[in-house]
Image (cartoon, rainbow, N blue to C red; front, side, top):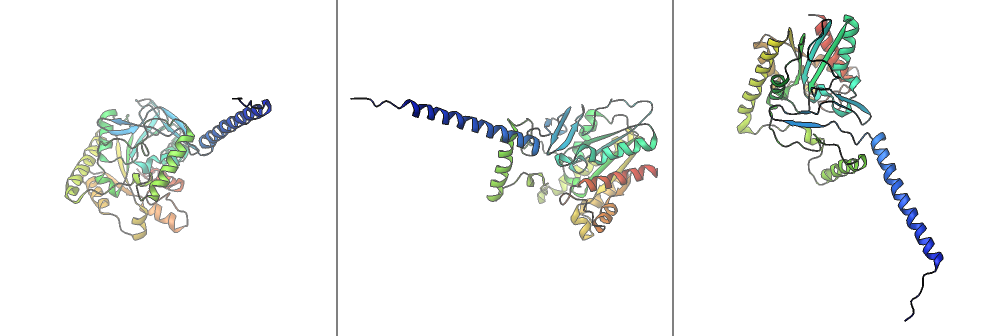
Length: 329
């Protein structure tokens, strides 16, 4: 049987097509990676680390850009620039504790944080070095703040500030495994693969009626039979944290953040009053952020990114409230 030989020209053309297809695929992948990394800002998420008593915190010593926003964590896992543990002789220090409201997350640039604004403006006003530590993480509550303070201390502050919302009085640590979508512990293999996984999986989950990445941030209400237990735990930890802060700082202030529905309805949620009563029992001043946010909304400047988190306008309002209280003390 005679074997039909392939024409040399056909073989050359076939090889050329294969080479061109390979080059095109490589260029497409490379272009996708560049687009995902430098245009979408993927590939370098702020990382979290589990902790035996704090529950979790941001991984220390990170300096990344996410969605085009600068995100820095110092050697103590704060969303702040690095600084020495001991205060300098001509220095004013504020340690601000909170959750995602004060942290800002990946959608808030480092320079737009309330803590960054306070640090810059107060330094100009006082004419000396000012350090403002941003000790926070998404869904932190009283138990997390207390454990962090017990682990790291208060860093020799002149003032401790706590910013919290009505629901935070029952936001207790669960020590569950960290969700890689909301609290990644490692960098993704590439920006392109992260984009495919994050957006495609989120879209498919939404279409299927599942939980999306955004919804995973929302705090579930405690079960009815656990409400009293959760309240006692949360308010107890809050009281312990504030007492510890008072013993380690010259001054302590608490700022109550309001969710957008609370302002629209004119009614604060139940936790608001319980938090206020806990603070007043300890002789700690409580400042409402409601007037600042309400006036901004009335003026047509929306201070919210969603129903709870402040955008850059909201961060400025929090900074304004903190600075105003400092100036009046």
